[in-house]
Image (cartoon, rainbow, N blue to C red; front, top):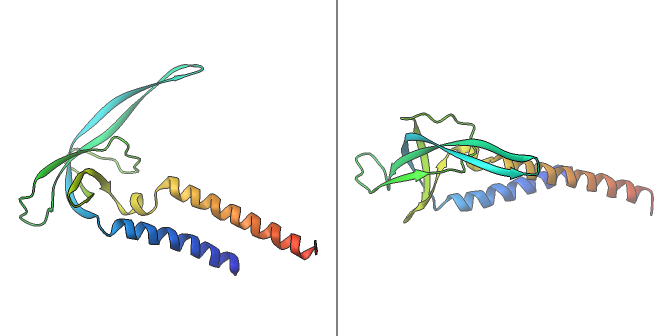
Length: 144
């Protein structure tokens, strides 16, 4: 039972921090204007490896509500790690801090609240927590 409470505490703290970080963000609609490509070449001990990265270029209006005439901005988010397949004309959600549209990011519930890298890290923390809990429990049972 204590182990489950520990997991709840870990994920509770994570979602609390993400919620506090999300509160000041403004989420507005945007539209994919085009798909850009970029060739990356990496030097490895076995030679050069190249890969092509595709990412969406998105336009959105600051403070976009129905009939809004806020300033229009363009978002080029090259570091998109997404399961979404962006196509020209696709509507997307854009999140930004009011007054700081330069740091705007594509917003989706899955990618904001459950990013793969953070979920993997939390899984390893939970596995480590479980291993430590089992090890300490056995150690204490032995009376050492």
